[in-house]
Each structure stands twice: as structure tokens, then as C-alpha cells.
Amino acid sequence: MLNMTIMILKIITDPNPILHKVGAQIAPADLKSEKIKELIADMAETMYSSDGVGIAAPQVNESIQLCVIAKQYNPLNANEDLVLVNPVWVKQSILKKTDEEGCLSVPNIYGQVKRYTKIKVKALDQSGRPIEFIAKDFSARVIQHEVDHLNGILFVEKAKNLHKIERV
Image 1 (cartoon, rainbow, N blue to C red):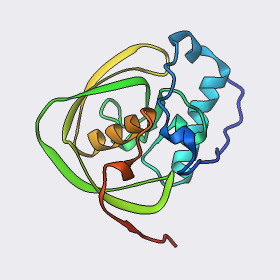
Image 2: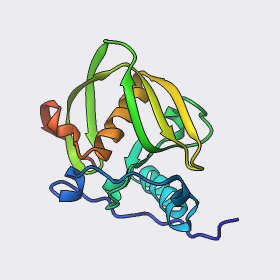
Image 3: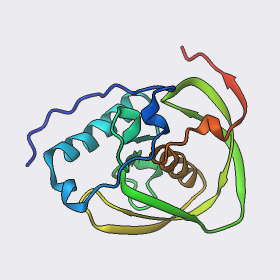
Image 4: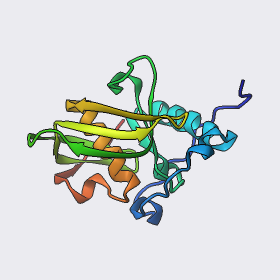
């Protein structure tokens, strides 16, 4: 059993250069390390404490291919957060939908982003096992947004009609 203290991590914001770099691949053996296990737990805690639906490692200053998707958007199991290691996705339909997005690393800025409505995702889970699944609609949007982070792309680079909304 891990004896770790879960921490809320500092979310870095644009224009931090780490947000514009492609994250390094993670070796499956590294997923057994205490450091990665703690990072995953801390990322999930940080995501929820910030009202996020997904978070990518570069957003917490770790330039690696790791993201966490909130459990309610996990197409595999709605009872646990979806951890994706070295994820890639392929469109499963030509259909795209435009919807409003925001980002914890670009606070108070929102815009319209066009994304595929159905994708096939291939990744490793947090234990290093290969996973493959279909994500649709909002889950597909969140995964595409987070994988963009892992590839050094922020939503503002794709968005139209950017606008500022101050949160209270």
C-alpha cells in the first residue's frame, strides 16, 4: 500500500514554454515508481480542486505523456478517473462539433473549438497495460484537449471567438 500524501499542485499558465513542448514518452516500468504514482494522485486532486474535467502533466510542470480525465467522462469505467499514458487517438468519424472550451492553463479565456465527435484511443493505463477504446461526444472532446496538451498545443491555438469570462 502506498503511503503518500496527496497534494494540490501548482497549475502553470501560458506563456510558460513547457506548455508548448511535446512531452516525453513514459516507459511502462516507470509507472511502478512512487514518483509517477504520486504524480497521478496529485494531478487528479489538482483537477478536482480546480473544477477541471481533465488535466495533463505539462500543466503541472511535468513534460511527460500523462493525463487524467475525470471519472464522469471515463468511457471505460465511470467509477474511476481515466489515466492515459502515451495516448494517441484516431478519428472514427468525419463528424466534428464546435463547442466552447476553456483551460486551467489559460485562465478565464474561452473559445469555440471544432473537434471530432468519435475517436479511438490507444494508450497505457496507470499499471502499464495497453488499453484501446472508443470515446464519443464530450469524453472525446476532453481526451482530444488533453492529448493536445501532451503535444504542446493549447486550445487557444485552435479556438475561434476567444473571449474572457471572469469567474467569481
